[in-house]
Length: 421
Ligand code: ADP
Image (cartoon, rainbow, N blue to C red; front, top):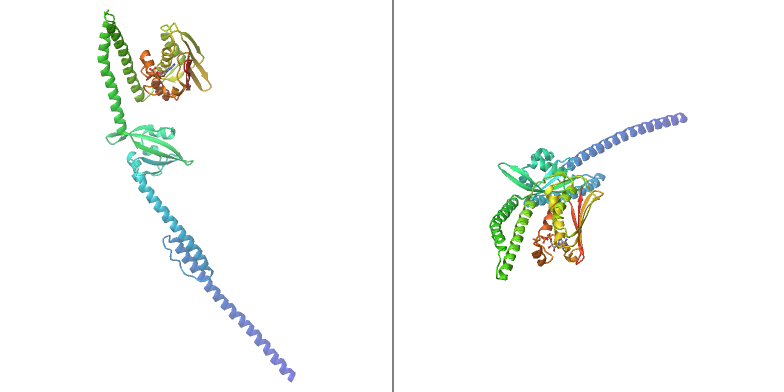
């Protein structure tokens, strides 16, 4: 009996324990479920709120959450604050730059590899008749319909600015455009308005051309009279001397006037009158005219370069005759002059060597300056104007040619012009 009772009690305890465990498990499971559900909901809510806050760039007020999310938010907050300060600094710098670029009178424009406009300042908008808001990212040849400008942008020379004329409603603007390489795939354009300068240059050119013409007329009359009275016989030797002096100086003055007119012409000549010519033929012609007149000198010539060259014939005549005439002027009557036209790997060289009076080493670099004369008396004797070599130098710029001079005072000089083809 007691055994049976013991069994019953034991059985009931086991059932009760099982039930207790079962319900315990179920309740624990439900409680965990509820806990994780709220945790998950809280996490989603916190993530969404943080996301909204992140998307609001100007709002720095961070949402408040507990636990490890708050640590994350603090880090994001710091980063966001730093980014906001940085962007404020950037926008302040940009505004400053925009203000600065507006106050620059020259136009500045940024163009990419595809020749599309990236940015420009207000002066560039005004000078090139652009509107940045409308024209940004458009190709420059669609915005500026000027062949000269577009071809310069495509094939720029970086060393000196290029002048273009741009039509602006009913007037023409003269602009100087300079391309500056900027980064690897962009170019910077600097545009200056040189309209006033061009007008002043034109007036100067016209003035010089008028003045040389006006001076030539009375001078020709004076020369005519002097030529006539020069051959008369005078009792007073002073009169003969004075007339000869007037005669020489009038010739010199006439050369000066002609040279000034020539410098003026070369300086403002816009386009080269290019044709394919053989420099050897031009040189032979120049020598044919000069050598018989100065036949007491010892002449020698070497013509090796016989190919053609694209040049203005007048320019070549001017260069050749200037250097040869200088050698004639600055050597003795029986001096030696060697003229040569030599081949080089990428062009040719024109060389004149003489055994004349030479030039002092320290003065060699000055001889191409306008009106420079090594010694005033030289030019009075030779009738030189001091303009010949400056004219030559100006012409050489058009051909990217270079003049090299070697000279020894009292021994002679070598003038060499290197022409690239
Ligand atoms: P100029 O008309 O006076 O000859 P240039 O410009 O041709 O003017 O020459 C400038 C100066 O250079 C001359 O005054 C002369 O002193 C010097 N010069 C030029 N060529 C020679 C030369 N072959 N030998 C010596 N001096 C020279």
